[in-house]
Length: 291
Image 1 (cartoon, rainbow, N blue to C red):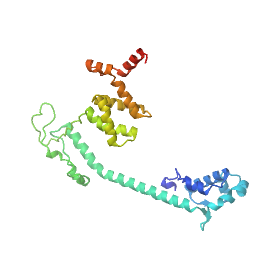
Image 2 (cartoon, helix red, strand yellow):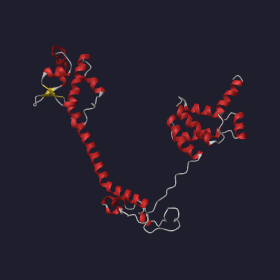
Image 3 (cartoon, rainbow, N blue to C red):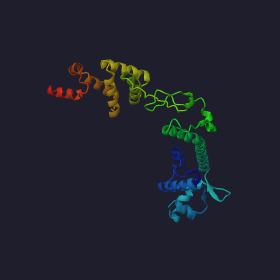
């Protein structure tokens, strides 16, 4: 069992255990559980009551008088001279088989990665050589390795490009045999409306548990209340996600009301006060009015 790494845990089916042990005393429960942990790690128990009582941390007289007479019904003495429990034997066999399958899958994955490693090394060597001297550096063809054959068609080979050197000073003239460098521009940032109906919808779903269509309808209503200010609503939803209120819908609706209070909302539009903490200003205003 120790070879399968399953001796660091033991399955306990609480319902089954309680159903079988309802008449055990506290001491008997403890002794039985210690025996089962020993069984899980080492296998069937020895037919030696000195050893069994030691495993159960019980005095031998107490073991003989009030523990083993009750616990012996859970075990059967088999031909190998050991006490067996059928359920424990099945669970140990199942755990060992499952552990072995996982180990085999892990070994297969590592073997596959090891076979692909030469291709990756050659690709790195080619890139480094090209960076040192693109005109005279060696060009290593990854196709010479069988492990790369399965990647054919996944992306164009460097020889399919006719790309000029990227060095300053000779950018206008292509260099024969130079390795192409594919420049992938970064994804443009999402505009506020797109972010709202992607990230915002997902965030509100996670907070409320509502289905997507209802969340989109709710966000549409909030957006109308915000005066179609997607950036503001994004900020309010993000703040709600960080705060984790008990009632997220009420929290967001209240925040919208505060952010769109008429006096300060008009002030923001007229003077471009998007960076001003309007919530704090509104609270000051309410205090001044005695609200």
